[in-house]
Image (cartoon, rainbow, N blue to C red; front, side, top):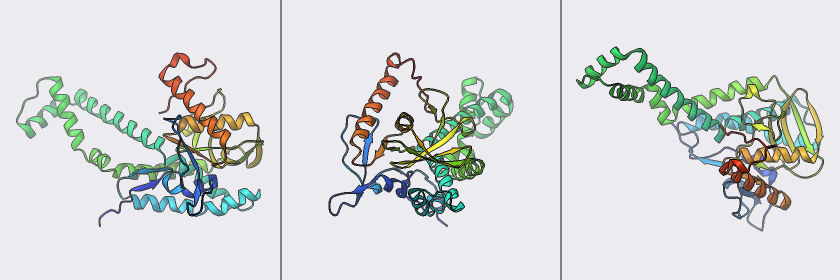
Length: 321
């Protein structure tokens, strides 16, 4: 049976993006405001949730399987959001599970995870090739003679043949078709979900101001640095944070709480969203001050990354890996 492929795949759930919208002009439906963090000076028009937060062929092999898994999480989000708005997120254990799973979903189904996966595969591929050449040079020469009729005397020729064997391997072929990524991302989702089940859920509201949300919205953070470090492995993180409305943030923590955070902490969380974003952050269309904040923060971040000596000593640059 031919694997079904869904091309436009939302990495940020539309049910989540809709919390940041307002009704546009007649016939335009719900809209939110995007800011391009790579080009913060660019003025973006209001956009629908359908046109935001998606990637082209993110899961390139049998994406229908992954979409079914994601849908099983997103189905419970609407009722859980209503419980958050009502101030009763812990009244029903199913709501707690839905909110926690929403964090996991957006942590795994992300540009960041795909980058980590790709980099890890390339690292392993180079390591395997080097180890084959170093540990099995004679079997490698015999295999080269069998396949090509050539005696490979130089190390460079041996290395090139080892690379050819790695390219021909089933694992590398599955990497190329995307089959390996689909298996990897579904497996990672289940592993992170199991890890997150031992954490509690915090539902946090700012004293004033609003959250924005990036296109890598569920971010691992450590809070023992200023600004916070982020995008570390989940085992090294203090929490995973996910904005779910302009006035509500989910965080994994040590206890189930509904709490309020000061404006400075909200700003720090918004900075993390901007810096962790792949391309865009999104906000409520009427958040004009937040739009200015996002553009200015993105401009400083780009300048600091291009010219590292311009960065403030009190703001260490965090590597996005």
